[in-house]
Image (cartoon, rainbow, N blue to C red; front, side, top):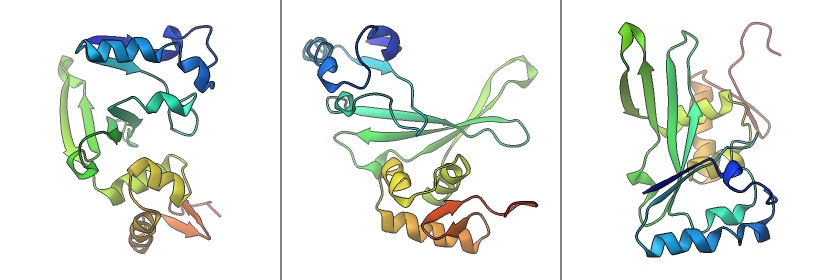
Length: 175
């Protein structure tokens, strides 16, 4: 196994948004795959939550795992792991997971639970995503599914629907 942390440091001098520049790295990674070497590439997300740079990087990947901070108001550290690409398996086999970390008492303990689609939708809206298209792409579901979940979440008071935008629930002082 080879872990490359991080892609930006590895590809110094190459244009991050250029798919053509990726062609300098891809043959090496594919050669490692043929030699049965598992390669894990750590890369950073852009402001939109998606992998930074050219999209061609995703083509040869078997799995893409996205991590999102889900720390709540009481400060308990949590994150969501979601496979945004899982080759050779159905998305239902890799549901989003919520990892809660506790560092109290001098040792790390954690819990892990499956996060439902509606819970994940609400978390993404809280993080600033507001379009069904973007959310559907991240959750690997249809826009219709996102819309159905959003209507249920709105009915439960967990988000607002304003035209075609999804917003966090109203709080005092929120228009």
